[in-house]
Image (tube, rainbow, N blue to C red):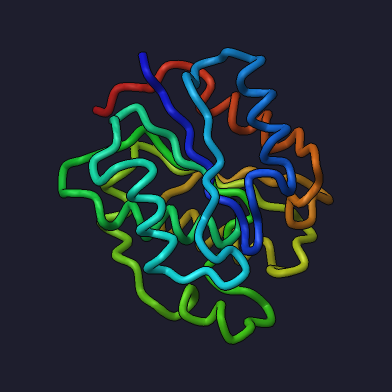
Length: 195
């Protein structure tokens, strides 16, 4: 079965930054459940806008992606994933999303991130568009110090399963074993049927 994974990087992230190329290589080597992996090269990564990033994700994945599709976002990439899911046609459902260093707000917002925080997203449509949400957080993320509150919001708003990786900060290392382990343990086997 074709089961693609699309990765949306963080603010100022590119396919060759952080852990993305390492993760792609690990997934290809594991040959475990995911048929392909692609980290997207998002437009204007140092000044991401909702319209441009959601549009780029829709172009890459398609307006109606395969039901077996898995999306992964990192930091602001998580917000792009959510906003893309809200655009899917009613009744169209993907397998799920892994959201790494996800947030609803940040401790010290800067001007260009404010629209990502303040622009509402239709959470009912987001929840209906994916079978499951897994959120990977750190207990010392420099952008969201209150990880307990952040966790609670993901659980309340999306019914997400939240995994805590102690000491992982914002998951910016060239290798992030917690990301790989969470991805493969939650999405590395055949997609479950939706009941």
